[in-house]
Amino acid sequence: MDRLTPSTLAGRQALFKQHIARYTRKVLRDIPPAPHLLPDQLATQMLHLLPYALAQPEAWPDTRRLLRTAASGMEQAAHWDKWTQQLVSALTHSRQHDDAETEAELLRRLGILYQRRSRFAEARRHLEASAEAYQRLDHSRGLAQAFNQQAYLARLQRRFADAEQLIERVRGLLVKDDDERAFSDYVLGLIALDKRQWPESVAFSGRAAELATRTHQPHLVGRSLLCCGVALERDGNLEEAAEICHRAIKVFDELGDSYYQAIAQMNLGNVYLSFDQWQVALGYYYQAKAIFQKAEDWVHLGHINHNIGISCRRVKNWQRAEEAYLASIDYWQRVDNVERWVNTMDGLGLTYLEQDKVEQAGTVFVRALERLWEIEGQPGYNHWLIEVTAHLAQVSEALQKKESHLEDSSPII
Image 1 (cartoon, rainbow, N blue to C red):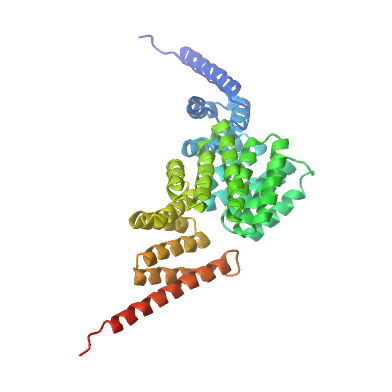
Image 2 (cartoon, rainbow, N blue to C red):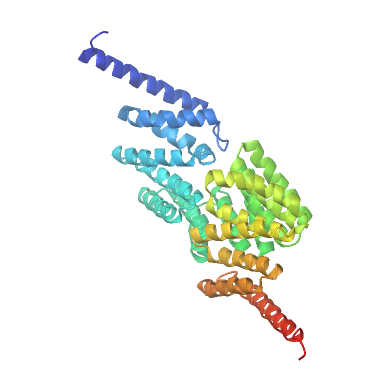
């Protein structure tokens, strides 16, 4: 074996650096144009390459291009954990290189990733830091993107006033037809959905889809269709809702995005649930659930388990209904969504009531009412106050009938 000398070691190090530089440029050339996903093989190459590329200070110009070019494709892939780790490392390097613009973008990308993993506190911290960084740079478009993502997160956390204020700030930063305005309309459509304002939600999401189509943002087109489909289904326009859901599924299938395709399948399942085709609905739910479990998406696991609970309750599969509702309740607790928690508790109470487990049902309804005050004055409060109170009244009526039956069946002595 040849003995390594400083010169041969330096030579090998130089060759290795050249190899990393060439490989980085090759991967850059192979990345498909946004908004397409990175194929699994290319995503794996990215995750393998980045630690070596980041370790080469002179390669930073190409490395930063690689990070920023691949970011949207990696956000939609099933590599969220590893990609998050890489971006945390890249954020440190961007600061070492005094690259403020890349730092601002990486903070925003990390915020999106944490939001998708239901780590809302971390998501908010990174998105706010991104906005501050863009503000220091006087970068209006970057600031608008950070505000839009903050608004989306605020909507998930039911901080509707905060979300709407952030969107107002976005409007003040952008020209009329800027493509980023489509995301603002999409968020407004979601807020209208949460406020049970179905026509307004259809209008906002339709406007978002139109602008996203004109500005070549197919992924946002698909997401806007999802919102529109839910609003139509809730408003009773089931045929149109089903057609919109199928369109969304096609969009995400063409993009190769199994995660958002699963959301579209869940929404289509909801339409079939409204058609009283419970077994068909369950088929779509179980397909979607497997994807949400893989992504560890607590929010959509909360939704899908709730929907499975409804379907199983309708076909009187009581054990599965109870299991699904309890799983959903756990996920809503994790993300601190009181409105959804109350909704699912109400479903669990009905499951017990329909089995004539009256005392258990009453306990569940009372617990739901005890927490409902936490969202007093918010959208959904009055609806659930009426619903849960009515169901608790059914419990009282059932208990009175039981007592009456016991009295009537007493023997005459």
